[in-house]
Length: 218
Image (cartoon, rainbow, N blue to C red; front, side, top):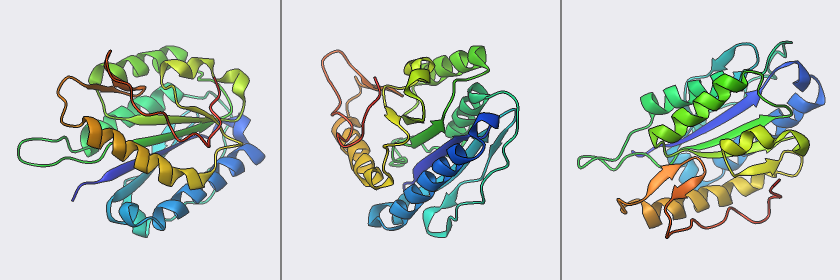
């Protein structure tokens, strides 16, 4: 069966101590709840959590039907190694995502949520990881959920989908799923289309805009 991989990436460095990490965990818990009540997601969704601070930790993928949000992560002081988290994401994508072939349909386009209040500490690693993701041609749709719109600039190289963490509502996830399916159904058989974290890269084609209810930070 085709899988819908969903990555929940969370900054767990010292600046997330207290309300910020609770806000992220409540939002991610809401996303899990929405997926569990969506018939399509129940049949296809697999979820993994990636936490990053000084170190990066990733949970194995689990079917949404049996997935339970873990307890609040332990917050540690030190750098925000977001670049290392992106490298872990790309490694997982290469290992866990099933490509379409003449013999199989392949998985649905993976969806990534990355929540933070800060900027990457490992900026050189971050920039290199972004280049690797784009160069790989990975079919990742990445959403940045940021708690401070003044600190979003470094992430514009990663994705155009930058949303206010405080205003993002988990109920919009169902619309995001439908949006990603619309993109795949429209473009999946067009060999001239190249996928990137910023959407479909084609001079003559534009992907539909993301769900309008979410406030995009520009």
